[in-house]
Image (cartoon, rainbow, N blue to C red; front, side, top):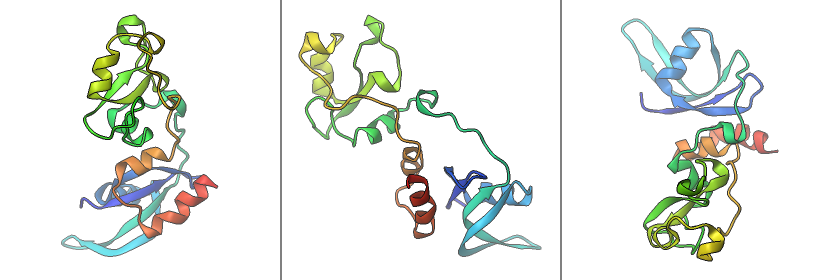
Length: 168
């Protein structure tokens, strides 16, 4: 049951992606309803379940926005389009604190960028002005839908209208 299911809030806002197994449990507990089905079924000894593609929660979930979301390497790389924010390289990528932690920099969306290993080593624990190295784009929190795109390798056709609705 490793299939992925798009989870929408009660307001139809995309929240995340879960496994088909988790989606079926939410449906059985009457915490979610199916909006789209995949056409596949899971069978138990006494029952068959249609595998959902999209479910909507029956209750509203408050979602933290902006820098309240946890910083992760994967999210930073995706936000920065998998390229070094100093030279543009797409190989040997690491994460760099723009203001180094040793100089009081925090681990926050506004202080972390993708950097290739050579640029990260060259910058070291210096400030951008001291190193003459400034990020190409200002670091910021990712857009809310970025978390959906980070979890899947491809967006299913049945998901598109819900994701397009969220960006409109």
